[in-house]
Image 1 (cartoon, rainbow, N blue to C red):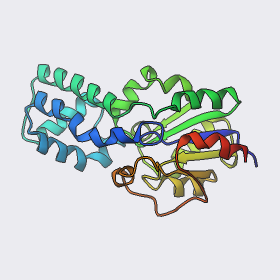
Image 2: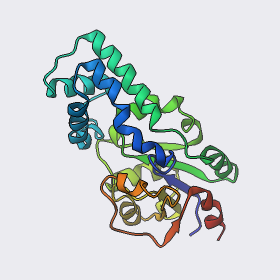
Image 3: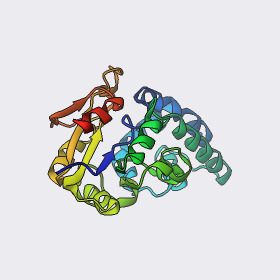
Length: 231
């Protein structure tokens, strides 16, 4: 079957892969607001990642309160206010658009393709999504934090397919290969496409839970996607 919808991964696929290297630094101001050593805060955030991205820590404020307590601090409400602001500002720093990606999304929509998203993410992205430049360009966004499960759980792929109104067999899944996402897409019946991020040689080391499955469709950057679709 032909392609009617394209489902994207978010971090490292729609976002600038180079920005991911600044994630640890983006937590520094949050740790300071909570009165927690930066290294301890980074370790706690990393250890809690599987639970945070499936909603088990709650929203950003609840998450930061819990992380602070795990680090031995009970922050005042005013400190939490400052920490939430710092965390949200830090989250903006790690999600700038990949160069040219907003124009690409506009072109794909103008060409009649339905656009979807599946992201393993914590609360910050979900809370800010409508105000991001991506929000108005994506027809159906599915977030692990809201769904309660993460890639490669087939329910994520089923959810985005249903929201797009397009059968999985007519969806392509495009991502940089973290979280075993392509194997999940394949098992869900979608056509997976790997973005190798050839211009970002350090990006692969930053992927979470790399995918052992390599799709037969591979592109070095997202700007090659329209040509791949045409062929």
